[in-house]
Length: 183
Ligand SMILES: Cc1cc2nc3c(=O)[nH]c(=O)nc-3n(C[C@H](O)[C@H](O)[C@H](O)COP(=O)(O)O)c2cc1C
Image (cartoon, rainbow, N blue to C red):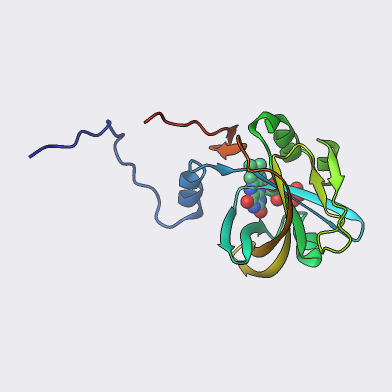
């Protein structure tokens, strides 16, 4: 019988059962692509970074974004029912970090913000960042609350850019990029 050699593992550490601390402590190490969400409502622009984003379906082409209801962008996202979702390239980590640090409307002082000109679409007038590798313009189909967050399921109405080649990632409080493992 052959035995399987595994890399040395640190001793398993017992963590507190079912707490937010447990989840936060583990999940911060998982890592995810950084999305830049932006919307406009009644003349005011709002933006935030989000990693709680996933694709949902190709028919219709749709995705899910989880937004804390305490976020300053939340009310506008809910009321407008449309947002842009940009994928920053890793090279724009400085812009991402600056947007993360800036409060409220000052997030629009970083990078080159544009306005979508598509009068026939619900996403007409949405702000988007020119430095993104790709930006999806999304309209909300449904949203519902779970705990502290609101889950927005949105259809992709239109998009600008191309498939991201080097997306900005976030893991354990740090920005980074994907590294292929030679096989
Ligand atoms: C890398 C990163 C990822 C984040 N992901 C999310 C997310 O998925 N959902 C969310 O509600 N807030 C997320 N946040 C926090 C928001 O971007 C924002 O900082 C927070 O809502 C506070 O914004 P406010 O000052 O406008 O209220 C993330 C922050 C960072 C830096």
